[in-house]
Amino acid sequence: MGVAELTQESIALHEMVSASGDPGESIEKMSMLLKKIKDFVQTENPNLDSPSRGNSIPSSCSRQVSAEEAHKSIIIPDDFRCPISLELMRDPVIVSTGQTYERSCIEKWLGAGHETCPKTQQALSSTALTPNYVLRSLIAQWCEANGVESPKRASSRPNKTSSAFSSAERTKIETLLHKLTSGNPEDQRSAAGEIRLLAKRNADNRVAIAEAGAIPLLVGLLSIPDSRTQEHAVTALLNLSICEDNKGSIITSGAVPGIVHVLKKGSMEARENAAATLFSLSVVDENKVTIGSSGAIPPLVTLLSEGNKGKAVRAGVVPTLMRLLTEPQGGMVDEALAILAILSSHPDGKTAIGAAEAVPVLVEVIGSGSPRNKENAAAVMVHLCSGDHKYLVEAQELGVTGLLVDLAQNGTDRGKRKAVQLLERMNRFAEQQKQAQALAQAEAQN
Image (tube, rainbow, N blue to C red):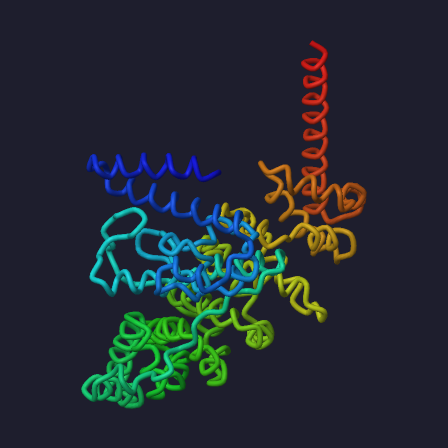
């Protein structure tokens, strides 16, 4: 797109806004026009220096991504851009309408008193911001694949509770902690419930609660018999884990065995939140070994089998599982493949697995894995290749055909079925390709 086309679009947009059209449509078109102008400027001016470029970006988000400044010629996928700043997101969060924004940008929007979603103009039923771990992982993978420095998230507030909290608020938290240690089951249950809500409310609360010493006390409640208290405690830890600094504190407090206990024995909501807590903690690489060796995988498989696939995918489990598949020790390959086989049957799971560049790993397992792992890898490939020929082509280029023939003859019963399904899809695709080529040749001759 050139200057003339951009000018025409600008004029058309001005006329549309002047005519008092639909405000949502106007905002959407303005956003798209700004992105086109930005892409044009980056393409036509690759040596544009960062100070002048920085002046054109909203001040709240102007210094988010050094990666973009160092690699201006790379076109960033639209889904990876914040709809407000149009910049590569470093800390994507989901609002109540389901839209994703860069945390600092949407927080500024909400802080200005807005009660609507900037992109859709729908009223927000809640101002809660949920971390989008899946998108964050996909952005990191995209950066690595394109040689772009992965954007760093902002660290926790440097001054923490000293200026953010009044003495009355700190006293309230201390009172709740005193109830947690009282030994009275009802006091413990109500206090854990209040801490759960406080930790959900905002970042300042999460910092203050952790600094007051709540984490070890909540960990202690994970193993008590009362299911409601368990649920409050594990959910409070989930909410606290949103703060990056708290993740390490939760791990060092010995929380993982207790979380796994809840994952096995708790109520359905407690089990779901226990799984989400483990996924949240696993975002930090150092925590993966602790979680992987904790016995969390079997109860997680059970939970997913009961219909919680979408929640797990949105919590960011797929990138974690892919890392377990490729780690040199390989101690969690069986479990990771079993979970991927379950998740691949869900649309979101299929998308996330494809985006994680799983095909080469799956082909390798089909060729050299154990009988059970070959079976599960083939099952994932069946779902991945359903309706999307690019993965089928990629697998063929990696030599999967001969491996599937062997699996169809010598694999487990389920492995044989999955291998035959894949081979049949490959044959159908080859026939479609031949027909398309013949048709193209016939049209060319005419």
